[in-house]
Image (tube, rainbow, N blue to C red; front, side, top):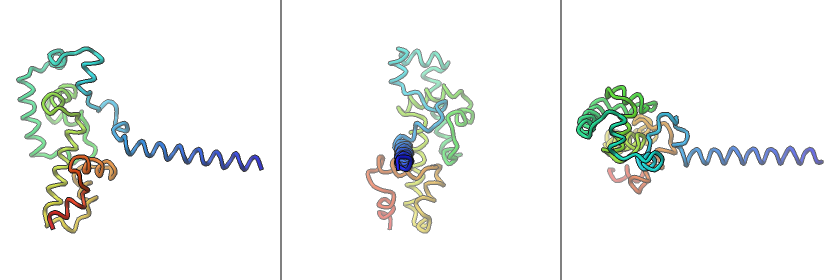
Amino acid sequence: GLTVFYTKAGAVLLAGAVYGLGYRGLHYSDILAKSSDRAWPPEAAKDVEGDTTRDRFEKTGLTEKDVGCVAEKLENLVSEQKPFLDPELTLSNLAEMVGITRNQLSLVINSRYGMSFYRFINGHRLEEVKKTLADPANRSRTILDVAYAAGFNSKAVFNKLFKEQLGITPAAYRERFT
């Protein structure tokens, strides 16, 4: 009687909690990223610490001229070596490849491109996916295979970003080229 009711109610509550956490995880995937690798949004830095752009440059030891040189080096690295293909790429890993600190790289990406590290990397991954899907030679590959090969490690995040950026699904995009 009463014991069965409490057992069933507990199971329903547990299932609801698991579903709710899973839903939040899919729709707020950036909260699952390591907090140490999240790029600090420039607006938040300004609001919380009262920093100006000059203060942030001084804290990292970079000048605005340095940012231009680092941005050029970053673009060359990204286009030639394609580190974004690694699904485990972090801000720290990329900073090491460029030869600067993670804080300096974060500042460069935020100030030069106006976005976070993850938006920057996923933008390059999306470009790789678009290029691959448009190539008829890759028609036999699944869209998910193409996404994983481009560095995405979550189908949900890939589909969400693709639809956000392009306004269509990956399948609809691919159909344009057949």
